[in-house]
Length: 268
Image (cartoon, rainbow, N blue to C red; front, side):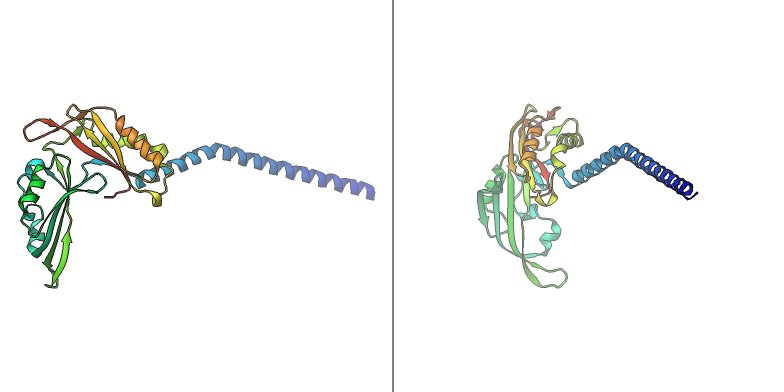
């Protein structure tokens, strides 16, 4: 009798273990099936999130070198800082200590400079401003004493407007600037997804839209901090599809215009 009971208990235990094992292995199989069916979409969502974040952190723009611009015709009428500074700023200035006009190169180096001591430009400064060709980048530095509007006290200060001389009608990408930026973004995603924001620098590629609407003189003048990205951006500008409408001067003549593709982070 004892042997029969022992055999029966052993049989029940074995059956219980078997059932437990089956249930658990079945559960594991279900989990694996669930993971396999959801892992791909989750991974894709994660990659898309990373790409969107990279896009938002990576800057793209195509324009003249500086945001402040003057046409060559407008520059031809400049005689003093009153023609450049806003009226509110002029009203607060009591006296000028020095005023310089500098023609800048691609890498912010000085090409030529003329100095004066008055808000009225001297002959050498006027000649420099009036004879500068299209796409010239100019730095004007004025050191002065101004009256503080809140305290009424006199304080030393300075101003450094940066100006690019542009044609009366600038070169235009026929499909529109937004289409151009989208082309640059789309074709550089694989490179920009690897960037670490703290390593990014303000990259710049200069290029010229010629009188016949073609692109020439494409050159990297500032790195983004990633040589592979620099090369990609330079190649993309060189191979830009579509057409450009060339710039036009005050006489209606087509002229060359240099533009700047800025990428990475915003910078000077």
